[in-house]
Length: 258
Image (cartoon, rainbow, N blue to C red):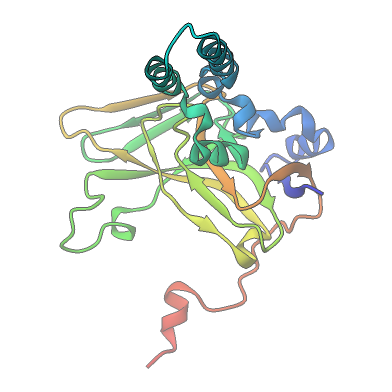
């Protein structure tokens, strides 16, 4: 039985929220494609094994009919195997088999100036919003890593959930799209898989000499989410709506320590 990736829409506009949750299948492809392999034009365009099989059948026929000798056969085998494409790389196939593609649901424009200040506008602020994290949150003292980057966080109005033993990994959508942002890799596991807003943290390089403009059309892949087990999308109204914090975290965790 296929594991479930449960989802529910969570829009600020209650009328739109009700509309989308009453007919969830109508809208989910705006946000998520499952699975990545079936929606990957690059992967499907790579040469299949069929042509290679035909060449080996013909090679065997010529060898046993004494049309070529053993040395010629080895040479042709070597040439044929060079045409085996990345379609048969297990590392790539395993990512695409167990990943969903998260898409930008509406046209989006982001402008970033040379100081890292940004402005954004979307065709539908109900479907996507952009936030950030300050550099103090991710730039370490006396370390140049990430100092020339800004965090662009794509916030989508969905909550997603899996069983606790299924982990998620956020990845660059590199087999679908040459994105001008870097997906911040992160793993969700354990209790964090029970209910999470679908937010994607990314890094964008600050251009010190000019403004950077990103126009992201609706449907553009934003990231992959890879799961430790294959999952099937299922709408579920029972997903917890609020992350209840029951333990001191962040600054609250340290306030009462001596």
